Each structure stands twice: as structure tokens, then as C-alpha cells.
Length: 450
Image 1 (tube, rainbow, N blue to C red):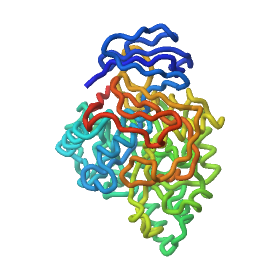
Image 2: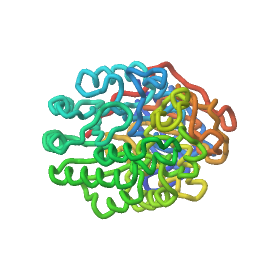
Image 3: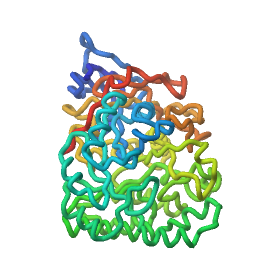
């Protein structure tokens, strides 16, 4: 489905400037971007008054775990998609470590069909790498809705793991597209887990899964990419040492990302939040957080993501080290980054570059990530004037909690629009949760990748 819509009087965040104006979407595509008052309403259009609001391209989260199929008590494609649009996210890329793992064409086709029925925004999926499924990875190259290959080089949540050199070489040598890698060194990781056995304090997590564990794998994956001339994306960068090394070593083949929580939290927050802040790779130290910000601003890091990985608080309640790693975040990421912007950490234009244009560029998403004529009509109108405190009760994610409980945020999406169709709305100063608009499947489609 596509829509016809006119936004008037908004502060539009364009690729090269911020300007007050009007924007028309016709048949799901941005038709006209004009100065304020330049567009007159037409019959059949949805009219939105953007006075006092900033109009952004719909944000893109290229790193989520929506748990469908297999663990609907945590999330499914419907609840995850609803949470995403509540946060201004109009497209997502879902990871393969579901139950069962998405490691073949049949599993991916099933996921794409489920998303078509349940989601209210655009969607793409990774195929998971194993030691023996190169033929499966080859079979989905160029398929709509399939964004790339995910390799877990170190053990994390789930049982996907490829760490032996001969299998990694085979994948890099004999597949196309982009490889996204979870870069932790399995050998060092297992050695350190044994050393830290018996520690139950949450601080042990970052000590065990240390910076060297991440840096070894990042260097190894980068060498494989260069040896085989293969596009590589290093997911959820966590350490300043990795970011510094990539500054002079990534070249044109390699891109990387950082999670909102690694830009926001440090060791003190981990101590306060406990297992709510438990994730892999871990939240590290103040110096890492500040260095990640520096490397994001200088262009070393290409985009900002969430690694939305929901677990129930009941599952988390067993405590460290037995609690599952991961936290929700897809519906808070854009407001969180806009709050950082309004607090002077970066600009609103930076946020759009990192959360809209950046993911679209990294994954080659056609016609997404910018307010340009001819691009898809994926939009979010945000309120940068009002600040609200978020609580667990406000969230749409099925697990019903947020690591940002009690935090004051601004930049809440007032309207989220997919292909010209409004899918979520709030009123300025109204309910934090807002209102879901439209039935499952009313908007969104499998993303095409170049």
C-alpha cells in the first residue's frame, strides 16, 4: 500500500540544510520538497500541520532481534515493528539467531512472509552463516528482503558460531553482498570465561569480554575482507581501541556501527542498572564511550543502531552471569539521540546522517534515508521542544521494560509515516506511548538492496 500526504510548515532536515517548508508524498514517494507555503492541499491527501515540529526521513535500524519465530513471549515481528514505528523507525533489518536459525532460503522466505502479514514498516533479514551453508548463502544473493550475511565470530545469544579460519575463508571467498560480523575472538573468549568463573558481580562482564577480545576479531575480520575483496560491516563497535584502529585501517571495503547504549552508558550505569544493562559485547568504560563519540563524529563509525535484543525481566532476574545478554531499545533510539543533540553532544543533522542516510548507504537501500524528491515517503515528525520522562509502562516492546526507565527524553515522534501512510501518532504533551494507527500489514514491504 502507498499513500498521498502533505506535510506543511515543518522544519525539514534536508541533506544539506534545515529549512522551513512543505513536503508532498504521492503514491508513496516524495514528489515535491518546497519552501513554506509552496504547496496547496489536493483532494485525497492526508494533511499534517508540522508547525513547531522537525521533519526527518524515517529512521532505519539495521540491527534488531525481533525473536520471530520461536520466542514470541519476548517479541515477534508485529510487536517489534510497532515498537519501532513508535520510535520513528520506518525500516529495520532483523538478525538470524531466531528459533530456528535463519540459515537457508526457506527460513528467510518464511520470515519475509510473516513480516508482510505483521509489520507496519519496511523490513529486511540477514541469513546466518554456519560452517557448512555457503550454498544457502549463495542462493539468497540479490533476493528482495535479504540484506546480507551475519557471522558470529564469538559466542553470544543463540548457537550460531563460525570462528575457525578455514570456514571463515570459505565464506569470504565464495559469497557476495555484505558480511556483518559480531567481532569477538572465540578462543580468547572461552579462555577468559574459564578464568572468570565464579564472579557474580556485573563488572566482571566487561573485564571478561575485554577490549582485546574484540580487537583481535575486528582485525581478523578486516584482513579477511581485504584478502577476498569482500564488503564487511562490523556490528556494535564497543571499544575506543577498535575505533582508533579502524580510523586508519578500514579503507573502502569496511563500515561499522555503534549502539545508542554504548554512546550513553558506562561502567557506573552498568553498576546501577545491573542485568538490565547486560549485553554482548559489553558496555565498557567512560573513555570508550567518549572515544566512540569522537570516531562517530569524524566518520570512522558509519551509523547508529540499537541491537534491540529483548529478554523478559523474569529471565533477567536470575542475575549475572546466568541472565541472558541483551536489552530492548528500538523505540527509544531516535529520541535518545535527539536528546543528545539537544544537550549539545551533536546536531540534529548529525543524527539524521547516522540514523537515516548512514544505514541506507551501508546496506545499499534503494531510495531511503533522505528527504529527496523521488525517495520513499518514509518520514517522522519529531517534537524537540517538549521533554518527557520515560518509564517501563510507556513502551510497546512485548517485554515491557526499557533500560532508560526514569530518563528524560525529547525528540518524541509525533507522526511516523511509511510510504505516505501514517502508522503511529502522538499529541504534543499527550501520552508518551501514543497511538498505533492501522492494522498489521497496512504499510511496509521487503526492502530492495542494490
